[in-house]
Length: 276
Image (cartoon, rainbow, N blue to C red; front, top):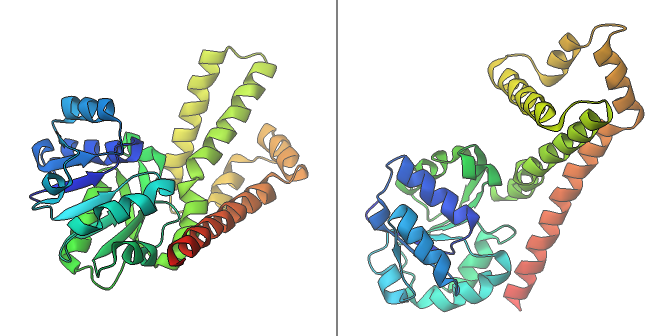
């Protein structure tokens, strides 16, 4: 890619820029970045990654093959309206805006554009994101490959239908928070059973990593792996019985369903304001 324009300089934009540069997918000098008003942040990114920072929109978009929309979703309508005169019909638009549909982007841009909507998660910061990608009919096969290359620099990615993105948001978009919530509970329990905090943290992290590796590398499903750890009358069985008695699995299912529903509600709310 000869030139990439990035609108927004938050944590996700930075994670993607870092991933692309570290993977040598693109050089920092070919990435142009802008944001709403945080000049200090742009200067920091310029120093760390060697990117080009500018508030001159003509300079930002001139010759750009692709544009990443990475501003806060609440600022999306104003931002896209501001930049639409500079968007060309051959520019690939890559959006990481949660709850902002492809149709909404097209309506705001007021032109036909190849648009990719992506749903990564915050683990992109350590190269372990699970990113779902959806495209409109104007995205070419070559552009799809380019987008997948970008998101593979920060983890794994897969193409899905746009209607599935709310479910992905509820499952993996918000997923890291569910794991952190579990880790919080494990830390609190460790304190109550008398384990030193730092030692407990090491055991918790390694336990989570080990379980994730087992899931990734074993042909067995989670239920079978759990049963293999659970000996009759043993410690694991005693613990799992408490989880079952407190409806923990059901609570996690309801949690993901509600996060999915909220993603749908946010998307519908944004779409309604665009159509007005």
